Image 1 (cartoon, protein in one colour):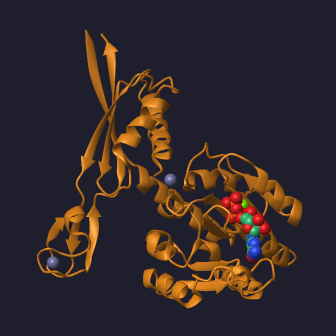
Image 2 (cartoon, protein in one colour; image 1 turned 30 degrees about the vertical axis):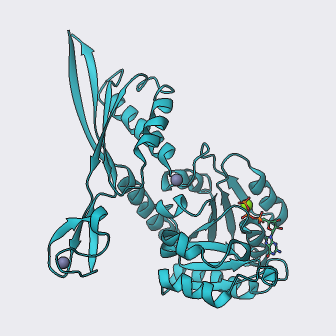
Length: 117
Length: 225
Ligand SMILES: Nc1nc2c(ncn2[C@@H]2O[C@H](COP(=O)(O)OP(=O)(O)OP(=O)(O)O)[C@@H](O)[C@H]2O)c(=O)[nH]1
Ligand SMILES: [Mg+2]
Ligand SMILES: [Zn+2]
Ligand SMILES: [Zn+2]
């Protein structure tokens, strides 16, 4: 839904990391995207392809998009389960006293640079 | 030969937004400024309601409005023309929501004076604004009668994050027979049992007193708690 905003944020953070490390150009950005983060991959990639060309640091860079599976934790039986398959209901004990503990965030893992040497 | 260097960043996108949001709340607590995020569909009556609300509160409280329209400053101009209070426009490059980095910039522009109340008119959209922390201490949404009483079922997250739902355009209820106020209230409470609900009409003034009292109470609570 708000892929463009996230793309701008990622590019800005990547640029700041590049500056802080004296990097002139970024060749690849690695992103970890939670399965239930509401980010739609193909739309994100489209926005990224467009937006990266507008920034000197990210022009022509690759996107390494890693999807992180979502898992929930059950307070009743203290086990974990796959969120997308089961929703709020624990498949082990049928309790709904559960919470998502991983898979709703987006995080910038790293940037890469290719330097001539 | 080229040689690849990897720089680890490990920075969470939503997490850093939430941290920024918490910083804004702490700062506003210190300053005794109540910062409210107002969300709704396009045309639900945000600007009309705000104009009337601000006119009733402005003599007692110092108020500013932040307008987050996608591309125009029509609402910012309308609000300041019709109320005389400071209103600023934030440019969010055609995005579908406002996050706390954008609101921080706007709040910084207002930092030279003390405000009792700052209201953000968020982008007209029932999905994205609900997912992003803006740093507000109260989240309010407007649901207008013509939109239908099933909106809480279709947009559950929005109704889960709001402290108050204003049901607007109550003067039109006779034309929208399928809108049932009790069912609407039940639907809202099924998503969020502690949500407050105030039906209003900016046209006839119905419910505006309750809304004004709600804001007065919240301003005082925020100052004193
Ligand atoms: N009948 C009736 N019409 C209303 C009421 N409040 C607003 N309207 C009308 O609804 C239309 C939209 O109102 P706005 O206040 O501009 O709505 P908004 O949510 O700010 O709209 P955007 O900022 O464009 O998303 C205008 O034509 C208003 O006159 C009300 O209480 N009753
Ligand atoms: Mg408006
Ligand atoms: Zn969005
Ligand atoms: Zn269980």
